[in-house]
Image (cartoon, rainbow, N blue to C red; front, side, top):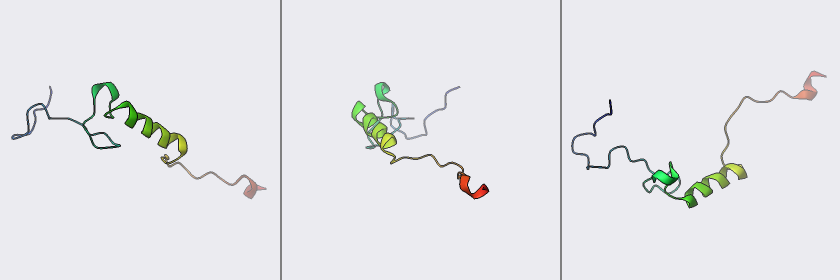
Length: 65
């Protein structure tokens, strides 16, 4: 069952997500972004290493010898 928007919320605005790059409303064609440009900016940040997912530290291979 879908949830109802909070009382006093503007009609049609319930659940509208903002673009994580610029803050504009996301579009269906580019979700979760507002445009292909913002989608490309996000991809570039991942590929250039600006974004990282933390992981376990790697063991030093030379330390065991």
